[in-house]
Image (tube, rainbow, N blue to C red; front, side, top):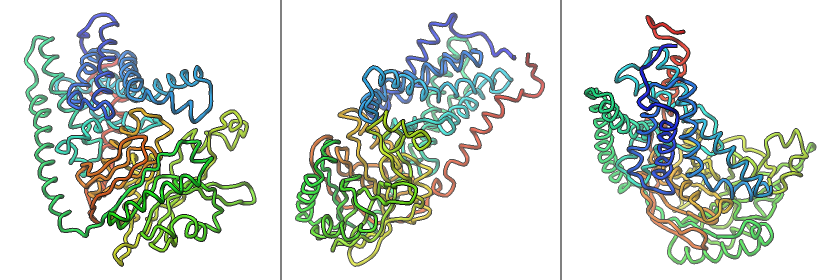
Length: 520
């Protein structure tokens, strides 16, 4: 195998410490902890540690970085597993470590691809950072994870850095951050190697960041101008804040609470109200959906509504349960329905549970739901006109590709997410979820209205700013004026196709030696 030069640090300890430092900076700069300037240097230690490493060592260093990032950033997995599975704490701790290490494999894949490509003669000199970029993209797009996240979410609070999402989604934002990291790493590596830094890397890294900021400022101005001319809607969200077991054991209290908070919003002039996922926790037979929801739920509200429910039907083979979003008019008549597609592992289904039913006995808190089959929009009537609204349930709002498909099919004027993050306790997870969801508003230049059971409920404008939000774990409402918008963005048209091509290229060169370069 072709040597790529001596390592900058002798021994195994210092590169490993650098990798762990990189993972620590990553999660501290990420949503939840939100020390966002750290994102501009978080990958630098990893780039230093990877210098001169074999593919195997590079994979190990990536795993250390990724596992550290997951243990710090997603520490709430322990609470989630305890709540969902009902397993003992010790066993859940083992599972948490396994899940964090598995998800950390995303950066192990990055390190391995990078190490193999360089060992095969690719990415010499300043081009090493292009190779690393492709490996990084491959990790974000190809590697399977339980909870999808993107490095770009680190700057969710800084709109001037996030506007490029309408061109290339969260991956492009992450690449902008990576370019800045590469420039810093190149300067440090050059110092350690006692040479001058490659000017193209410095110019590219700082230039890409500056170009992204200038684009962001321009798009914020343009989008705000479009919003000012679009039809307005006063929308409100209800956050019922019912405990997980309370929702199931006392659905009448949940309904009373939602109706009371809705009445307060109606007095403020709200024209559309949004309740959270499974805010109506009665198990309703599918064939009586409209009558039940009109008579028991929406008929007394007096304003159009979108709310979550649980429906079931009995088929010849088994019962089928659905996690749904329903849209009702001011009279309470159900106008449209959307069934959740992406079911949450352990919470709504168990892998192989249908094949081995005993698994549901071992995990009594896990649900047994059926996935939806289409992404048609909800239809909401306000101001005497009907409007398409794309509904996203639970973590569907952190899936850019799925949202792209739903927007292309539904041609909506508004995005709505209903979810329930109470499973994760009073942790950083609800804030991370909100941060990741914000990018759907930017990618499609539409308002995003989020109602969650326990927070954070929020209303996001088309440049990713939070215009109204609640606190966590309190019964509350939030309302704001939004605008019906339609827009076709570059990202909506091409999605992640370019990034998949780059990732594919990174995989190819990891297995193909560069011409004229010898391998052993």
